[in-house]
Structures are given as C-alpha cells and as structure tokens.
Image 1: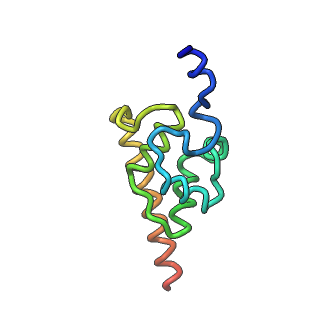
Image 2: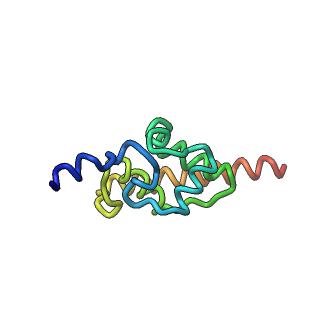
Image 3: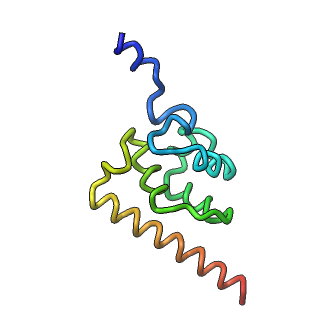
Amino acid sequence: MAQNAAMSAPAPNTGPLEHLPNLGPKSAAWLAQVGIRDTATLRALGVEEALRRLLAAGMNPSLNLAYALHAGLDGRHWQSLGPEERSGLILLMDGLRAARRDAAADRAD
C-alpha cells in the first residue's frame, strides 16, 4: 500500500510549486507573481532566473529561498545542501543583488 501512495504523489520536479519541499505559500505566491506557477516552469527557467525575476519585481528573496529552490528541485531538504552548493548560491545571490544595485544606481544618474 505504501508503494501505491508513493507512486501517486507527484515527483518533486512536476506539478504545483506547493509540492516542492521547503517552499511555503508566500514563496509560491511570489513566484506566481513573476510568471512561475509550476515546478516545470521553475525547472525550465532555473533558480538563477527565478531569483532574478523576483529581484526585478522589487521583492527581496532571501538566501534561504535560494537554498529552498535549489534543493527542492532535487526533492531534497535545503539543509542537505553541501558546502560547495551553499557557497555557489551565496555567490549567485551576491551577484544578483550587486547587479540590482548597479542598475538602480544607473537609473538614478
């Protein structure tokens, strides 16, 4: 019976965002606001583009959201991320935030 239940549950890389591990309703709503309404779209765009869209829309995604998205697409809990994965996501978030600051400074000039 447990096997049947496991087979009927959606895989972490398909279906609604709410089925991703680590992702709460607020994060799913943010993603929907930037056109990412399901896991297939998130997977196709990638974590970097999802974060870029959130920042461009004026939202302030946290590093924990980056961890959650990255791990969730693999069906893992964000705490399972290794040091290299975490470091890569820290660098990604730093780069995206710096690009947003630079763009805002250019608009102010």
